[in-house]
Length: 438
Image (cartoon, rainbow, N blue to C red; front, side, top):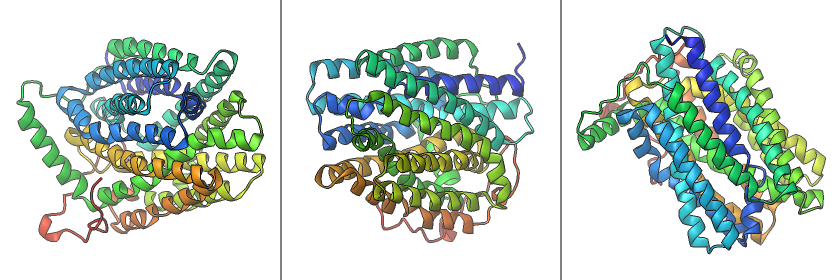
């Protein structure tokens, strides 16, 4: 059957919904699950940090796998890896395993997610270009966000109440089963279009070439670099904010065993994601530049996180959580479309993986620190610290806006306009120069 932009989008939405459903089954209970296994707050968030450390370690290598061996192969590897490691999580919970075993399996979970991070998005953009798509990428990503929000709503509510009716391990078992189903679906419907992996090339030589080009078209392009430098402060804090909500809101609610409430909190964020996806086009129309929308969204997100820590009323905190999720959901498709407009097809998966790596690295550092703050002081204190950390993204977003890249204002389709990489002799000052790469 001949592929069309409509069929490519349908496949992308199915893959997105399936992955989100599988992942979200445990989002409402993950931290509670770790605490129930005998870990304290520091150990639970350190386990999450090992997960993000795994993403940092494997992001670029798996992005290179997607660029060398194909986006479909990367997706299939991701589903199998996640299914196996999810099953191992249940085993560790049953035997109340020591922390080091949680650290190892968590890092392997991170490996599974890195197979998806750049590959699926790169597959979509390349396939749309190959089939003559001339619409707006912002709208495609926004619709995917709405669809994944609906899947997250179903998964988080279902996972929370499934745990309450059975036990905390059952949602993890169901998650592994859904991932196996996604493997079969992807094997049948997913084909690499608009991109031909070089399977005959020498791996080491190809890796060096891809990494070199990724630096040229990624890190050395100031607009891309500053977007990436903002990622650790947004993504690193975002992971903690989400997972700490589970025990924090149960504390505010007054019932530590109300797992259904924890699931409903994740569902609330799912609803915010759906609403945010619908709002993306409206938000984009309110700002001439995409980076202006990103800046405004981040300012409001910082304020929301700070207020979550300062307000102690359960219902007001729920409203602030909804606002925080809505802001993130409304601006993420804008960022995705902007970043994809700046990078070429042959390095797309690797550069997107490196962007995800930057976000994950922030989580490696932030989660144990914030978990320790919660242990020593309180969850509210950890949210105040989270808000302060997330504010450090604002200068980098402002620097990205200052580059005045043409695609910052253009309404683009799938095909990117590639800026020339800045030669080393003309490189602009890097505000991260004094910060070591993590």
